[in-house]
Amino acid sequence: MGTRGCVAALLGLWALGVPWFAAAQDGAALEREPGARAWEGPEERRVEPVETDLWTVLSIGVTVYTLTALTHEAFGHEGACLLAGEKPEGFSLGIAGCSEGKTLTRGDNALVSAGGALANALHGGGAVAMLSLSPPDDGAAYYYWWLTGATNLFAASGYLLAGPWVPEGDFNTRTGVLAGLDPELGWQIGVSALGAAMTFGSLFLMNDLAEPLLGRDPDLRSDRRLNLTLWPYLVGAGLLTASAALTRFDDSGPVVLSAAVGNFAGTLFLGYMPLFFTDDVFYPSVEDSPDRPLSIGPDPTWMAVGTAAALTAIFVFGPGLGNFPQEHPFDPF
Image 1 (cartoon, rainbow, N blue to C red):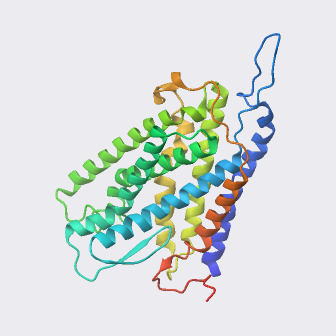
Image 2: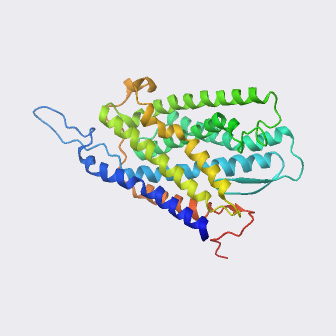
Image 3: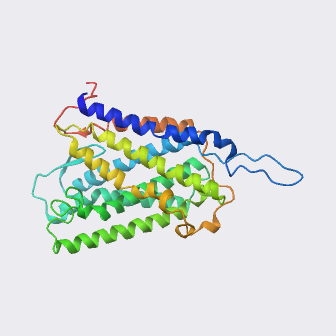
């Protein structure tokens, strides 16, 4: 597999091994979770603890991050390529190719370049609609839709926020959405400002929708904010960066760098949530938070789905599907 395979393996092990320390720290605490309090009085009764199973959370996180990347590359860029009248060449979780049989107009080029962010915005908006119109009663299902909304909305807004200033990327001024637009600096500032507004709008929206997962107890809120955001962010972004190391190019370095920036920077505010946005002012509906939040217990189904998503991200979508300069290293035929 060579150097790229070793790098991918090391990054994959890191992505899957990061949470062991947190699990060791939190495992014993599940028995005395702040939400697991019995009623006081002459007839005390046992109340089941509000569980936060870290492996179920991470399994959902890996699944969501993989689907978010597929939304961006396959449905976004490749879909826009079809709409522009061109032929999709192939995609991985870090790049998508579009065969340009004719010279693309400025509008077609902008559509193909912006397709990924547009697809993420639609995917995130659909998840928000699901939570708003028909919120699941199951904690793991609710968390899946919540994390889907958060990662996709932050990814879409992150491309607008930082993209205009990145030399290579969907919104750059050389080959991306902003190519050929004047005044260049004005467009950069305007698109970046729109991205900042979308980012903070998404932050308040997702904090509002997170209340069923957080509850009223201050200690439980703090633990949940950390375990439902920071760890999935690190593991999910790390896994997709590892996946990009296997892309079938002679030099996969630029793809790895792009994947690292797109995932670690693109969804950075998911990791920021428990670190910098903990005050009640960032939670519009904190007063309506339930006394007992939704529980996320050990779920073998989600663990199986997460394992399958991680393996698929590395061994199938890592090398990519479609036409690439090199053969697929795991092709059995």
